[in-house]
Image (cartoon, rainbow, N blue to C red; front, side, top):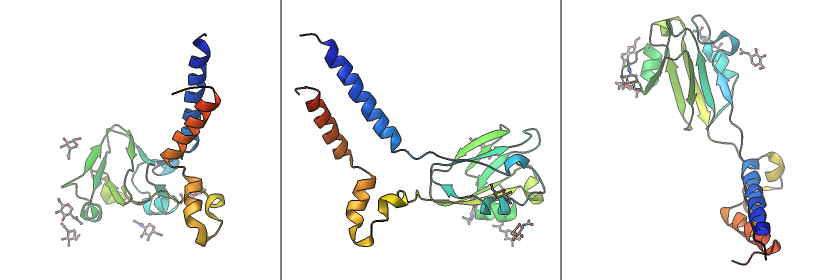
Length: 172
Ligand SMILES: *[C@@H]1O[C@H](CO)[C@@H](O)[C@H](O)[C@H]1NC(C)=O
Ligand SMILES: *[C@@H]1O[C@H](CO)[C@@H](O)[C@H](O)[C@H]1NC(C)=O
Ligand SMILES: *[C@@H]1O[C@H](CO)[C@@H](O)[C@H](O)[C@H]1NC(C)=O
Ligand SMILES: *[C@@H]1O[C@H](CO)[C@@H](O)[C@H](O)[C@H]1NC(C)=O
Ligand SMILES: *[C@@H]1O[C@H](CO)[C@@H](O)[C@H](O)[C@H]1NC(C)=O
């Protein structure tokens, strides 16, 4: 009995699981601060932020002249007063991508004085939304099955893998 069919079956199974896992991943958004105007003085970034929805896992990115400006993540006091004491982080590459990995309000300011000219932005990052409406619209009395239908638990993948391996003639 040749071993090559088993190897190709394993590869097939691996690819199947990989595709299944990838198809359940929600893609993240990169929010470019100020859009095509970038990170510069004289822009109302509150208006920009109000026009965006930020979700955990998204990126916020700052594009600017690195010889003139930079980015500091501060707390509310730093944001209100344009001070960088106790800053959580700072970036100065001129093209900074910052991962928004927590559901909270973030505060970013320019630390070279631009903050006093409007270079400050505060964004509220929301936890990931529930699954697409089609999966949960059924009704409220059936939330348990709706939830399990939209996000298969790991055990289900093990079951699928097991069935598939059985189907392909594996013996464990
Ligand atoms: C930015 O726009 C908001 C909403 O219109 C306004 O409340 C705020 O005062 C503006 N900020 C500045 C610095 O002009
Ligand atoms: C808000 O978003 C829309 C659509 O992307 C865009 O056309 C508009 O210019 C934005 N407004 C502001 C203030 O950024
Ligand atoms: C922030 O600035 C305001 C006035 O601009 C001041 O009253 C307040 O004490 C400052 N807060 C801190 C923590 O420095
Ligand atoms: C922000 O950080 C500064 C410096 O660590 C601290 O004095 C201030 O109380 C903090 N403000 C808030 C709102 O947490
Ligand atoms: C900027 O961040 C680095 C660590 O990434 C830190 O060592 C440095 O002190 C920070 N600079 C300021 C001015 O806070």
